[in-house]
Amino acid sequence: MERHSSVQDRKLIGLNLELTNVCPFRCPQCYVPSDGEKRFLPKETALAWIRDADRHGVRYVNMSGGETLCYPFLEELIRECAGRGMKASVSISGAAASKEKLLGLQEAGISSICVSLNGSTAKINDVTRQGFEEAIAALRWLKEIPDCVTLVNFVMHGSNAEDLPDLLRLLFQDVPPVSHT
Ligand code: SF4
Image (tube, rainbow, N blue to C red; front, side):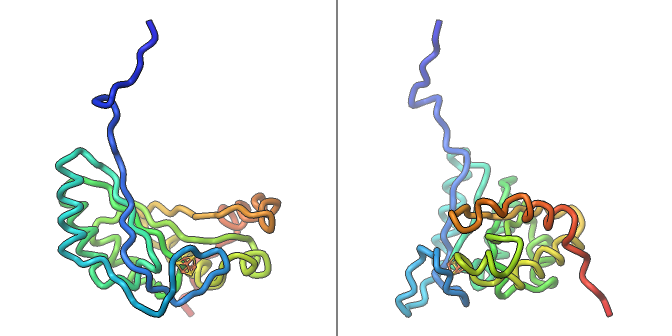
């Protein structure tokens, strides 16, 4: 007999917290309003929402922006999630990133870090995003951090759809380790 899911069967397992509209970049594809007013999700509100989500069985919390690394309480929110056994992930552009900051996220208990990149070359990426060099640098640093799951947020447009094989090649073969010279 066919089984129809009831409201009780359906479970919200993940949520996204949009932490801030602050970002050093102005990407052509961006939907985040940049009206000059800097907005940050209040820390206590974010913590209360995470606790509430945990009580209701949510297991995954993604945090986006704006630029999440511009949010001053990012590590605290990650710690709150990790302490509750929830998997926390963040999306970053590479702006405001450094190896130390990324290590800080890992020490706080991050589950995965997603880097935004829309092309295998600056020319292709720049049509829809800023920050090609910054994204590549972040990917290089992440490659050096053991046990850190790295994802790439590739937003497909007419301008980059055919570039996907080259981007995959870049990600899996050619992103070299950071030079320590
Ligand atoms: S990096 Fe993200 S938040 Fe910043 S301008 Fe680009 S799309 Fe918008």
